[in-house]
Amino acid sequence: MSAPQSYFNNTPIELGGPGVVVQIDKSLFNHKSKHNRRRRPKKYLWVFGLADTSFKPAITYMESVEKRDAATLLPIIRKAVKPDTIIYSNQWKAYSNIQTELKLQHATVNHSVNFVDPETGVHTQAIESYWAKAKYKFKEMKGVSSDLLPNYLDERMWRDRWGSSKDNTFTNIMAHISEQYPV
Image (cartoon, rainbow, N blue to C red):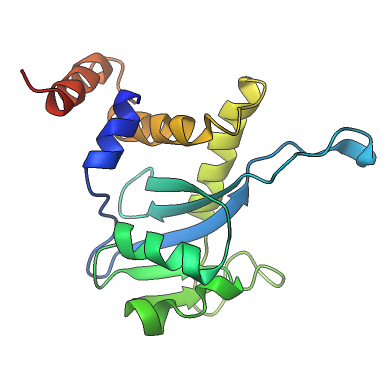
């Protein structure tokens, strides 16, 4: 188990808070075959993500999921999001019970009409931007094994939180390793 994975397994994820917007979305992390000429993926690699927009850039949590239904996604939201958070999402059916089941404020944008709702200003651009950055990194690596995807997601989240400054990256990883393996 890598240090970032161990850290995220042992440290609760807490995004949002009273009046804070957390954007949610799911994304496919497979290669796309061009003109139906290349091999198709054996299984689809879906990732569910949450982005806390009170930070610049947004702090995220990502988790690979087998299914994109409410039974799979709502427990992840419950685990990662603080009470009284405002959730922004697209109108995916699995998100329809966020308000009733999780008791969180929920606003949606209809992506088939607008990417930003002109009346409410609701959008999911922070999480969409995060998908682009994460996928670009995986593209640079010439793809990612489906078995290793969770490890790479954990590393990506860790680097975004504690590894962005070259001066503090080593110190931060050593501190997190020493927390996981005290002397």
